[in-house]
Length: 211
Image (tube, rainbow, N blue to C red; front, side, top):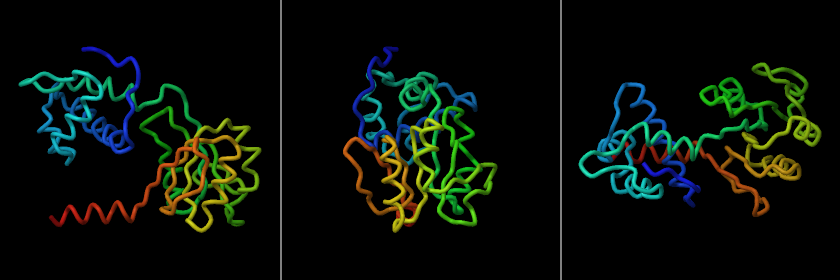
């Protein structure tokens, strides 16, 4: 199969679906399934067959008519696209319940994604350990981000305080931010922010579940 030489330009929606496909494909491979058709993957992912085929078309000829797709080939292509080969050192901003859950999990399924430091502005948390991590004050961010060579930040800070925290992240040259507060942030054009609104995600799930 022809391999990808350069990464195609993908929309955020397509990239998000690739992550879903990859997770399902790895499950298939684990269960000894070697090939799959778009209609079968559609049932697993709840993504339309036409959308799946359109997503896959970004990567050349991945499948064959009547045969479907080779599971191991798809995993190779999508892993090359999505899974970083070098360590991404991550700062967690906000050590509330959600932040603590992220610290406790710390991307254990991907050894190259690693939360290495945590920040909060709660005096009862700053200076203490949570889930094995020393919690720094937001005011210490400049020194710690540089010392730890942070390249990515995750913010679980509520919307009313998120902008101040993100401003300090951006000042330190971080251009990849995952934000769990729904309100949009003001950031320079070169900074990429991905928003996760759990309420919106749940409402969408409930809507489709009721159809």
